Length: 52
Image (cartoon, rainbow, N blue to C red):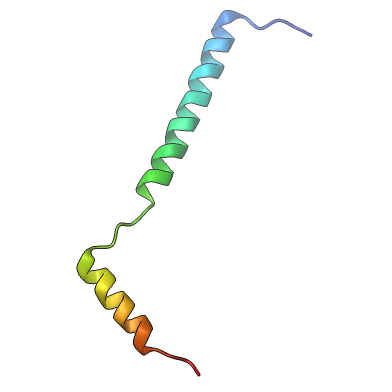
């Protein structure tokens, strides 16, 4: 198995760290927080919309 130079390990570490950070930021900011007013209207709309 060929050995890697230390510079390659550093680049690989930085690459995986950036991918990890981007993945976490995308997951964190893709979650939409609904306000209390919006939540209240959403539940009322669902309760009144019965499909028998």
